[in-house]
Image (cartoon, one colour):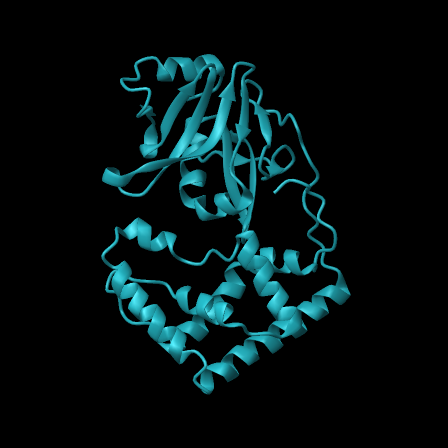
Length: 274
């Protein structure tokens, strides 16, 4: 386990190739640049694998998390499973799109809510003690009543508008185009196909969707985005209108908190870091 800068040195000591990094459990890698170590998670299959920097370990025994909250959500399974086994710091999901991070305890690396922090990019921990060095208040979780009413009203109206447009064939052209794109994309490696999916938690799409909800507009790029969001299976079945409407509901459920937060349901966010 990398529980200090010296511990990172010990793990890295017999690294055969600095360029390839030192292999870690779960196909993760440890890289070194000058006196700083970087813990990375794998992306893609072995032949085309790249590595995403997750955290750095510096000579003062500080672990600094590098991922944005969106990136943590995207790679949550491997982060929750692996991070606590590599370092004394573990990450756990405590709600849809919400993660806490702190010193892990016990076999399952569970966290004490009193000492853990809601995840944000740039959070730092002393590896020796597990103490957070730059704590911030959690984001507000209490909805503003009037904003919640507005959200529910606009959500109902927006979903109804999408269903109405589907009935009159407004999705047909987009579905046909997306099916052609998928046929072409099937020639790409699996991880490349997944990378082409719409990421609703990203700033651009999150803001665009909320803006469309508030203004009750349904531009082609939003309709196409929902079509492209239909999950692709190994069988590569063509997208259907029914699947698109199911995906609309799944999207608002899966990304409920980040969309409501963007809408302003929770009022002013306490975190300044993203």
